[in-house]
Amino acid sequence: MKVIIFNLLEEVVTGAHGEHAWADMIEVSGVSGVYTSLGSYPDAEVLALVDTAATLLGQSHADVLRGFGRSAMPLLAARYAHMFTPHRDARSFVGSVNTIIHPEVRKLYSGAACPHFHVTDHEDGALIIGYQSPRHLCALAEGFVLGASDQFGESVMVDHLTCMMDGQPLCRLAVRWLP
Ligand code: HEM
Image (cartoon, rainbow, N blue to C red):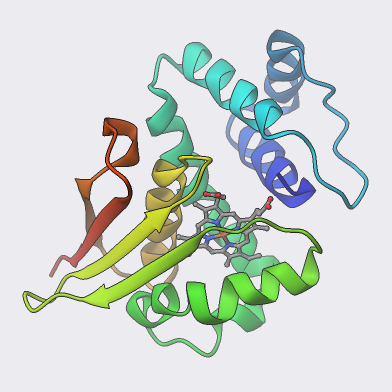
């Protein structure tokens, strides 16, 4: 996983619980904890950190990923404002993830293994996001979508119609806008 994901996790954890919490998480997780060079670090380290946070907070692994994704979005918006400014709403922003945002991320971070999404409009007004990745980080995707809607001052509900965690071939997330 690219270093930015570790840096965002550190920023979210220290922002919410203080620097000592990040240091504790590094120690308990048994990871290197040095995420400085512009490279990639093992996925297993980010997963170990998420597991530790889940234990410390008494939450599920999915809840931690979801919360992390949601809290990371304003940090991404501050760093990559140009990815957000062309959009007037979350639907347009989320719809551009596969075609504009992640392709740009792959250029910025050589070797980035961003997931591919299949985004379609459902006749009932929902946005359907098909997600498939060997990393099975659908809860992170959900958190990013929630964070994006916060960013545009909107309120959404995200439902998993199918989930890779239940042995399905792909996740299908239905995003519905609340009045
Ligand atoms: C709603 C919007 C977004 C969604 C749903 C989304 C979803 C995801 C997910 C689920 C991953 C985990 C990798 C995997 O599943 O295989 C990921 C990775 C990543 N995303 Fe996004 N993302 C969004 C927006 C952004 C934005 C705005 C950035 C801006 C920089 C970004 C940068 C990255 C990076 C750097 C990675 C790590 C790739 C790697 O380490 O190889 N994403 N994204």
